[in-house]
Length: 140
Image (cartoon, rainbow, N blue to C red):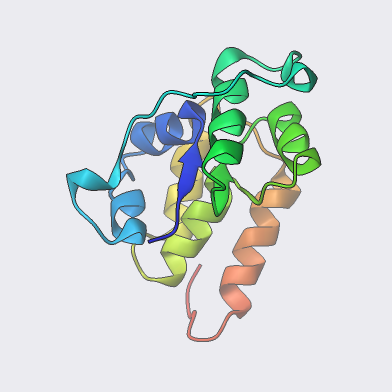
């Protein structure tokens, strides 16, 4: 099974819009799909501009050679990219889940926009357009 490390923020927003089952379904497992781990190596000084949760998520992803890091904050995403990590955000998780018919993408995006989650209208529109055009998608 792929190893995906997450900062707390994406999980927080999925919980706010009542879509946490998506992660479980995408991971194809029950409660054991979540494992809380502490970092075992020191945090790199290059991550000092990030909050503690982002620092630890990136550090753990590097330690475990994770397949991806689930993180939304721009500074955290950029730092993770500079460390060679594959980045996935909350919008991408919802897009992937909609492709598997685990959620209605437009509805999930509408709920997310009613929280304090911030993404540009262009980014939402980009994912909605990709969803409309991908094979088999007949609705948004």
